[in-house]
Length: 229
Image: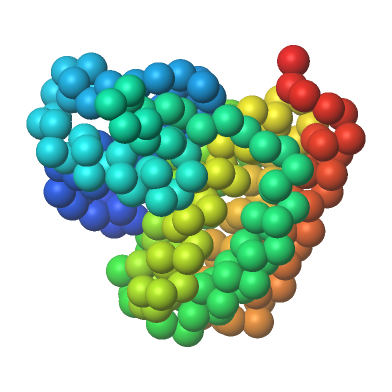
């Protein structure tokens, strides 16, 4: 039985500040459509719902604004951004190059503690694949991206990839039930995690390329289908 996500999150994602906590919760709610595109939010309501002060909420929203997931409307509130399927191809152009860089760096620079966490996530991804579990997949996906960013130890690449991760994850979540082969995608993620864990930059990069190849195929199929129902 693989380790549950809550246990994986400890080595993969540091607890951090209240701002970090607010960001993680809001990002997941937006990505998984509990907060819908076009929905108007307020700092006060979010603060009450998450039981977190307004200052950490405001700082988390500023980060989400930089990542394109929300738009701050002066004196009106915070708008959850709309989804533009056509722009996903532009996202993928950047994502392929950045992920190749940080995956390779992660394989070269990861610590032994991080190695164990990568293997843990790989096992979790394989479990999600066997069970075709979309939410489990999404959570391990988030943990994997966070761990790769930590292992790569390149703050500039990490900032750049952070700007597109949320947009990519939300696009996936909106469309994966109609278009994706979730078990295959989970196994491809597991291969990336294992390549980094093994400290093999070439294997990790090849696994990353296979993953992005699949995501491009998924994106093309999604755009060809038209709007999600």
